[in-house]
Length: 245
Image 1 (tube, helix red, strand yellow):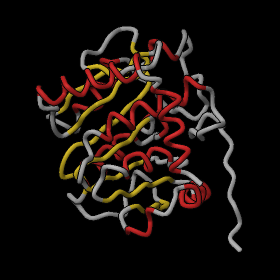
Image 2: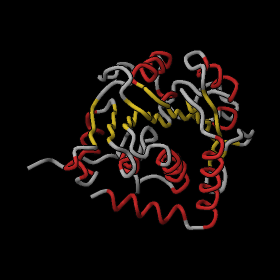
Image 3: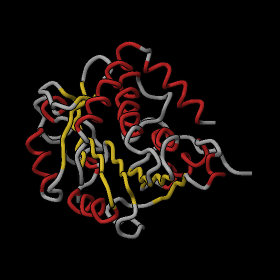
């Protein structure tokens, strides 16, 4: 009989139902944003953690692979996500984001949410994303102006680095000539918006391409309406739990 794996929320990876509401909503928002960009695409979810985000993207993607460096975490994800595996479109792999076990140019969309700040060799990580991508990569990270709070080192012990907007922009443009950086609010329902603001808690780089103007404006309006007027958090939390055993 297969042993059931349990994960605790330590601040390194989100586990749905074990973190506070704000932390869960921050993460859920990013995946619902990405879901609108992954329809019928081949997708890689880097740093998939407990698999909740991979399960969200699976509903729109043609196929998706979630990877994490922790074998225990990958096993947990495999056990938690319901049997979309039977469709042979969702997979979990234990892998190092600095050395991805995939051929070049095979993923149309890559998500790497709250991953880059965990990696000492982040330039190697970005080169790997670029190598396996044939489309866009979505990379999010905290705004150090809000998270460091006058500390010289990240308060989250799992973070190697945190950056200001200008620093993050410099990191990204070393490897991608074509990119946009958008913002995610640190207040209310953590809405995602096109213009980066000083009070944004997170930045998200869209690397290797740009959002089409008409589509992106519609997408941001959709997020605004859903976050502020439709019980977004509780409804989508229940949807996520329905994806899990």
